[in-house]
Image 1 (cartoon, one colour):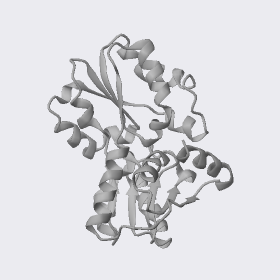
Image 2 (tube, rainbow, N blue to C red):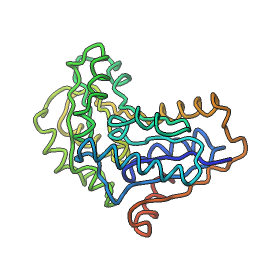
Image 3 (cartoon, rainbow, N blue to C red):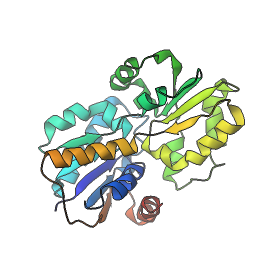
Length: 255
């Protein structure tokens, strides 16, 4: 009956939790966003690891039975250390590079992420396992998370940031775009808009959210901790301004 804990540096993990509410409706959930310290993408490896472990420890104090690290940056930084530090199962998200690279075509695959995710060894190893790593263009996109955290989601509200980071690809054929940060799922229309104006190719969008939730379901079953009678109740906690953030969070998981 205990909840599953979802962690992200801010609001982005709500996009993964939203999938869980649809795919695992018999579970109850606790969401913890470290909004007081968000975003993590430009922080040092040491800072990210410290803040993530502190946040997961806070969730543990609330009595969770399993955790989902719904943050690509935190996963790439310290998932192995987290699994060694806590007694409950921990599921993590990974960028959906594999399915994106399986798309047909001779164009490029864009992997958009925070600066930290793109620079860490875990991501570089994942990239090296692809059939043709040279097809993937990894582009850090600082500025997107900060704007999303302010509650901005309009399709035309990110043109300036995307132009700053992606203009060097003007006119290129793009087969797929990997949203390598859980925040980015909330601005799919912004990516689609930019791609239609500046790229050739279908620029199909990919994220790892559904795959992460399916793995969570398998882990709960394997550990015999499934909840047969929960109601998808969600408790929201944050290290930041709850009065300001909770209404945004509730609107995001209701989409």
